[in-house]
Image (tube, rainbow, N blue to C red; front, side, top):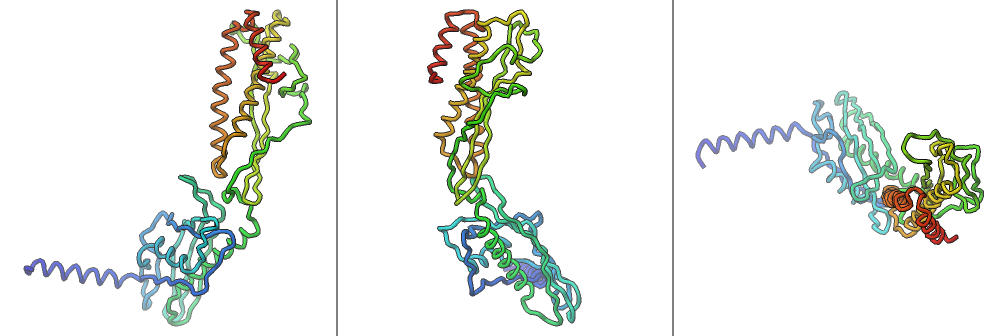
Length: 352
């Protein structure tokens, strides 16, 4: 080794030693007595802090010193949790997310206060989505007189374990959390008391009700058509969680919107009304198709909302095409033979 390389090596070694002396390395050690969560285990720990370079500031021999983890916050806390908290993988795996973590120590050697400002979240991950189940924050501190070995490690350990215990206690009392559900059971609520709301804007399809011209309340448009029916099918979803199952209550409706449906005053004739009624019947038909697709779907407890929206979108697009085919083939009810064929087809599909 030449002299220049030797000098540079010694310089960098000396600099590294000086750098290490200006930092306080935290030494977290697992507890001997493990916490045994009732319903979950900590699968992993993630550091979601905006600033991840260090762990805060502490006093070493009365001087302010940067605190660091031996490896990283994630790895050091994971090692501590794995050794201090039971990991029963038959239970529900959760992620412990650290969104804020900073040590602070003020005072003098004879009288000093050490604190930790932290915020952690218990999350359930599904593919790229995460769901926060519980969040806890705090600023626990300890005031000391004279030297107090491993004060920061003790504060971190106690704060972390107390947070896990608090969450375990809360979750045991409140287990019906949507992110913890394992299956979805779809329940279609029948609206036995569903009535035609003649005083309102919406009529829900019923087998014993036929449209009349008084239902067309909208202002006629200059569109070249004689009448227009605004028919839509929709749904309402209400999830209820019990025993790790989402009981998804679904109510589906085929509706005729009065105030946006219209007819030219001089065209209020029976054949045209029959044509518009079939638009409403086709709407009911696709509401039933939507129900059939939803009943067949295997829904994910953490993703059922987007799954339902996708199914609905597909059925809605087919519905729009069906309504267009109906108008095109019958020329909006003018071709009586085609109109009759459509009426027979829709009636059969509705099981009338």
